[in-house]
Length: 331
Image (cartoon, rainbow, N blue to C red):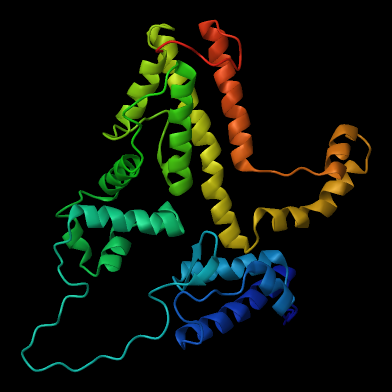
């Protein structure tokens, strides 16, 4: 009878190692050694402490997230989830008494529901927002939310509208089309900075009808009204909106990457240097090699500002003004 080999394949060995680490961290969480909100080891810490590869460390945190034991918090890292840890011991209550509703009044106002959803999205990303999660944060039954919100899609629409309402455009517009477009772009940028989930939630190809977002469209259209034909004005509006939105999407993805890896962008770039220099050592990219030697201080806000000014220079060429000139008149 043929005997099966007891040797494990590399894949089985990795799975075994990740399973042991998951079990150890799970035990520390359920016993309360790691309390809700405590940071768990990052991928880099796992590789160092347990002597495993980065892929194995990533698999560990992924498994713990799938079990609902940890969550990623942008700018912080991976922490123990709020509802993880040892279950509270039940407390006796007088016979015949009714249990108190957690969180007080279950009839939460729509504004509270939306504000809570935004807080979750700001801290953990849009994927963490669900009717169940928002209800839990408010201390109410999930089904009671549906008295105020039709569903997740309706909740998202209200979240976006509330985010736009936080930063209204000025009642007194500046003089000149260029200054007006710059105000609109920078206001959007600040909004996306405040709420990183907002840019990915918005769509340029399927624009959502957001009541507090329409004033931005009207502002941009009015800035160029009388200078260009209406079709070109709308195209300029879409292009400007998508320029700001496209840049802002990097904010959310970077926050997610930092939470997942435990490394900020600069630390991550340091890990890529050896491979980059292998490519540059071929001598095929002398200009890039010069740049890598000299170094580059990357700042997303600076890149955004550079691109915005070049965009406005392009509009200036359309309206017949010199690029970079301060536009005059009321338009």
